[in-house]
Length: 441
Image 1: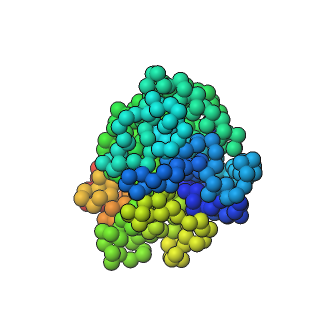
Image 2 (image 1 turned 90 degrees about the horizontal axis):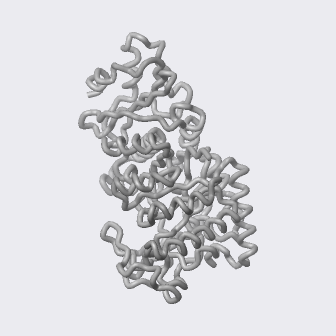
Image 3 (image 1 turned 30 degrees about the vertical axis):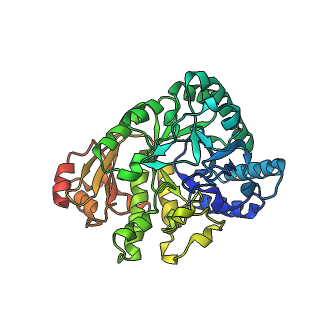
């Protein structure tokens, strides 16, 4: 199953399944941007017990993995909610999108039935991620003694998701689960695509996860934005193993890009914020499969709060339609994202898992990147994600001065929304890149 772009939406943004018109509006909105996969954060029954930190109500703190949360069911019976979700996934498919189910196997809520019925299934230590105690969940102990039971339960959950119409799985925090357990789970469903998240993974963890999974969600990419050489080397290694890379441009684990930018410089114009979003999405599309969280297309500053945490003033977001997220008409990137996604889906150099090489552009914070195909066609791109001062026509100048301008095709001529500093080159792998770098500096 080929996925070229993913739109992720927290289910609280949509509302209950009784508000089916909201789901229809969101799917139409996502499809209009040419995304071919839609990821829903968990909608299973969440825990009700308040943690010592004050956290409660997180949709990743799951009490029953095979039942709808009442806030999502919206008063519908389990059968009615099932039929409604089946309608949603069928509608997504008719609009050209694969529905992705969010699978949480690393932990449960603190009031899951296993806590009292089978406490040996749990680790004794609390789950801590990047120094933050996740005390509203209990981590499961995937030991050899527990593995068969936990694998069997995971298979039942995926069968439930498949019954609902989901064709792909995003595995949340999968790195504490043994690779052979994942192999047993994934091999049971040869017709489904499995995507592994890599939050909290080191390099060895990512390489271990790469064995059973079809794609990896590169959280490192979100943090490093494709600048670090080791990240590129890791990407190319995984591609050689036949894996696809998902590059998030935004995630519910982080502040929105617009908010981060404004916190660094609150005097920036909307034009600068818009350009940063465009550059980020274009760079992610070159690195791998772009993954955008709801609101990125509107440069939203609103954090996707998927939990209740009164101590931080954070609460589960209320339902809204897509248009209600557009607070500033200037910040409407729907047409731009649609153009990038269309280009990615239709161009072999972007949609194929090809190796990439890259070099930094001096101290600008930007970088030049190129990939090549077996037929000798090369795509060269300049990425200005750090908002350094790079001329838009830098590659146009290069191809005019190359002596072989007939070998260059500016990509912007075919896709006006794409940044002009991107071109196709027909011929052998370019030897003029070092000269080009000197000109840019």
